[in-house]
Length: 315
Image (cartoon, rainbow, N blue to C red; front, side, top):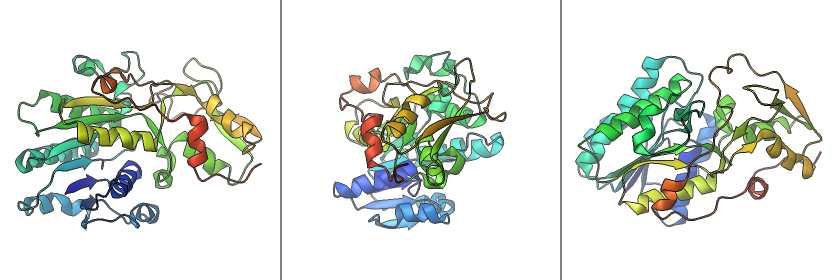
């Protein structure tokens, strides 16, 4: 059986659906599904058992007879504006350490969500080489909590039979509507176009012009393919980037919507003051390590992937 924490979330629910598609219904799903949009994410997923996030640690203590092959630990506090570091440490570090230990005892592989937020402003690059991890300087408490667990994992002599920490870059696609302000810029575009023909982008910031901030956008199907590749790979534990390897400006993304007549104009808005010190104006995943272990599928382009989204009517 396979355990997925954060199973009703964006990446978790898409992973569970993909596992169903390849015939894996022996899923133990872990999450808090009180949010109606998260419940929508999980409603159609075939599974063996659904466990509340607050009950999971007690469940694993009682589940010695369950044969678990893999644990995908995708549940976490992912709010980049959360400032309570004690809370983040408990949710993103201590909780993960307990699941790590469970995987050792259960002889299960452990695949967890790290984050591109660990790379901070990018001054130390975007390489997932282990000898460079400790040089990274996240810009916010969320990124620091992910960095802390990455460093802890790399320091362990006692580890699961296989483990992988996945640094997800800017994943976008179906199933992220519940994330609110933390949703991808693509999701925000689609929300804006429900009530307006304009796309709002940030004005000049961080030394770049209006809408020229760059991100590594990775379509959810590609992110899931890479995640499942890790489950099947099994021979080289470690930390891996999950991205496209290409940085695109917000303007380039908006132009796709303009060209397809889904929007009529771009409106530049002042950069939010509460984000200025904690914002990544540029990200671009170094994908060399993932390719070196055999992953060779080309990423879906922005121009192709947008056709898979639920689009508004043409402007």
